[in-house]
Image 1 (cartoon, rainbow, N blue to C red):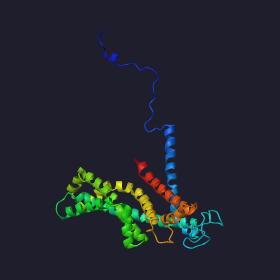
Image 2 (image 1 turned 135 degrees about the vertical axis):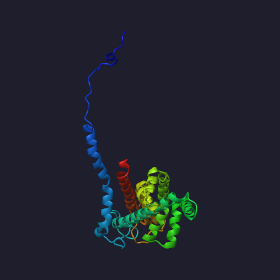
Image 3 (image 1 turned 60 degrees about the horizontal axis):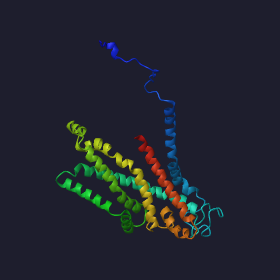
Image 4 (image 1 turned 30 degrees about the vertical axis):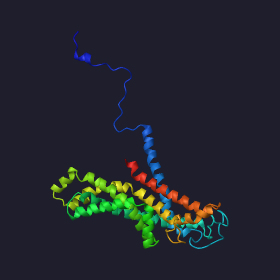
Length: 304
C-alpha cells in the first residue's frame, strides 16, 4: 500500500470550534474586570475616612478632648456622651476622634523617615560593602549596626530613646524610625546585591555615565520597590508600637489624646466592667491598621 501525502492528514471530526478574535473577552471576564476596580476602590474607603477624621475631627468633636466635661464613668449614650466618659470625666468619643490626628501623624512621619533612611543605607551598604578601603569598612560597619538594632527588642529601644529624649511627637517618630528602619534597609540591600551585577549597569558605565548617575537612574529605581511595598506594614507597625509605648506609660503626656495611653488608662476600669474607655480606642486602632493594610494591598499586590 502506498502512502500518499493526502492520507497523512486526518479529516476533522465533530463540530468545529470557531476561533474568537484576539483580544475579545468573554462576558464573565468583562464582568470581573468591571467589578475588580470597584472593589479595589472600596478598599480605600476606610483610609479616606480616617484621613478626613484626622483633618476635621478636632474641629467637630462635641466636647474638649483634654478637659473634664462630665461626671466620671458615664456609660455610652448617657447625657449626650456617645462613647461615655472615662474615669477622669473626659468624653471618650471626643478623645478617640482627636487622637486620630496624633496617631496618623506619628505613623506617616515614621513611615517617611524609616523608608527614606532605610533606602539610602541599603544603597550605601549594597553598593560598597564588598569594597576595600574606608568606604568598604564604613559600609560593613553600617551593616553590622543594622543587624545589632534588629537584634534588640523594639520595645526596649523605644523605652530607652523616649526616656532620653522625652515623650513628644518628634521623639516618638525618631524612636519608631530607629526601630523600623533596619528592615527597610535590608530589603533594599538585598535587591541592590541582585541588581548591581546586571549587564545594563555596565552598559551605562561604558556609555559615560558617572557612578552616581548609574546609582540614581538605574540601581535606585530597580531596588527600592520592596521597601515601598513594605511601607504600609511600616505604617501599621508604627501605629501599633506607638500605642504599645503609650500603654506602657511612655507615650504622649496626658491629657494629650492618644489611643495607646487611652487604652492603658481604661484597662483597670475594663477589668471591673467599665469597658468603654478602653474598647473604643482599641477599635479605632484596629480599624486604622486594617485600612492601611488594605491600601498597601490595593496599590502593590493587585498590580502583580
